[in-house]
Length: 360
Length: 86
Image (cartoon, rainbow over all chains, first blue to last red; front, side):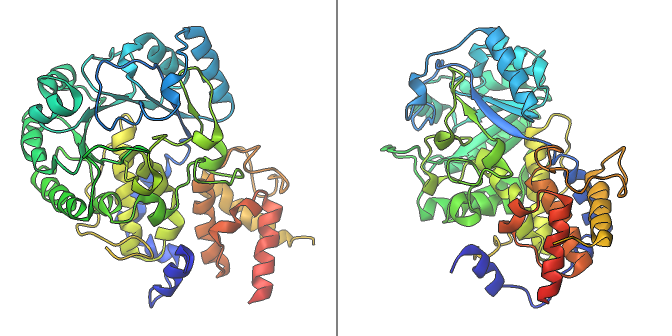
């Protein structure tokens, strides 16, 4: 039975009209709020092949892209950004390996396409003139950071660089081994009034390390995420449906059908048509294009992937009020994490709703 | 197959409302404009339109059929076919 058949088989006794689902003014307002951002068209860019850390499980140093020759010519980047804009790209994600090492290139990108996000380890501050969201990766407490990333006193350094910076969102990656560390980390982040969101470790292809999740660790992560959300409602940007999507025993591709070109052969419309993942030599390949290339798709629960994959499945969630509200919470969360100036509203659904066609 | 003018106008009206299009009316909207190539609409925009069309005509539009819905005229023909199947 494919996903569509399962959804149909599990279908709800009442067949809802969409106009009835959004008849509630609170739901309608949230729908209108979220819908304004449907114009965002994303692509991602590796800025350099250098990094000032070496982390276990880093997706950048898996596969071929790490060997791309670095192009550090700002004018080449400006030309690329102009071409990207011309083909309809309105949102850029600057990632790999460590974009803070190329501030001039980040500035050029920002000048050409002013909506976007930078994924950084936060050790070196990105100039405030680059007005993108900045996602600062946190992989556990100090001891774990020393062990997994070879970085000493990293969290304090990250906070020092980005406290009171409206661009900053701290992204705590739950691995199999660091689940309980979120308590100390979150206490420190909340104590400095920092915003945080959650990621689930998604193993790169051929990963042999010890961080990959199993059924037990996913269940513990799920419970912990829910607890922390309740404990720090003003600091955590997440929703119960985000928890479900990112801690399910099935990965994002199995649950929703990944819409990135790497897993999606359709080129007519959507991400399959527009998304590209550029390496630092400014080249791209369709078969390698997704937001976290060289991740094992079967294990992918990555927050960046979900932001596009779950959101793109709007149609499957417009079946009944609770499922749709859960999707709205997910979309509201993703926009607050990724878009400068977007403020997250209160979650409309406080409990965990199963994805369409699946159990919890 | 020539699509019904009334359906074409109504689809155009829904597109204009849902996508907040300016400087165009249902009457001036060329039904052969390529919505994806020329207007730059994406799958999310199209879903927002599809959800309204489903309500309006009491039909189901499958996600897999989105690539067929690239012009107002094609959408109108698709709706007509669905209505005939009922």
